Image 1 (cartoon, rainbow, N blue to C red):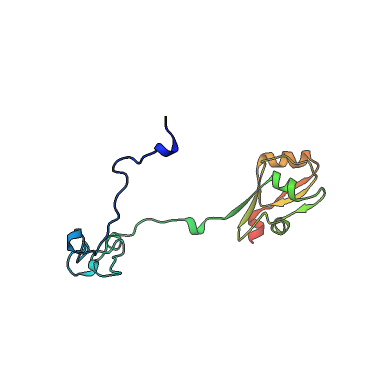
Image 2 (cartoon, helix red, strand yellow):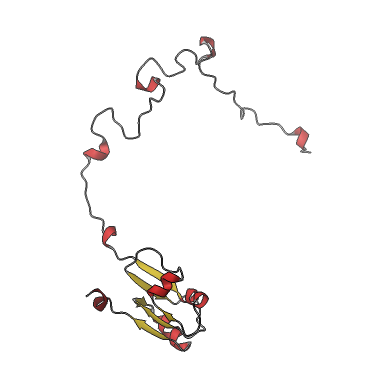
Length: 156
């Protein structure tokens, strides 16, 4: 039977702490396993990853190829109907300004898109840049109106 007082460690699982610099008979005395002199033998003498002794490192020798379009993409804020249900009252007008005031849109964004996740029981007048097909049905069924702004007219 296994009890707390009969527990024992597995043989070989516990090791003696390596005591460097404690005399030559310890096996790691004098130079403490660091060899003789040189940068790696000094205190604080670590070499950063990728350093090749002054030779041009590999990441700088290889040609830089390709193009990443991430900096030019449009940042679209996503809002769900369930969020409108929680933050707005019946008859409210919902635009990007009101969404920012409610804390639903944060930071810079190029457009606001409304998705149909959740149900809407209030009549809201919503004005956004993009909306999914299910959103229009749910808003009109609740007695509200949806205005999808034209991006071209907004930019010019």
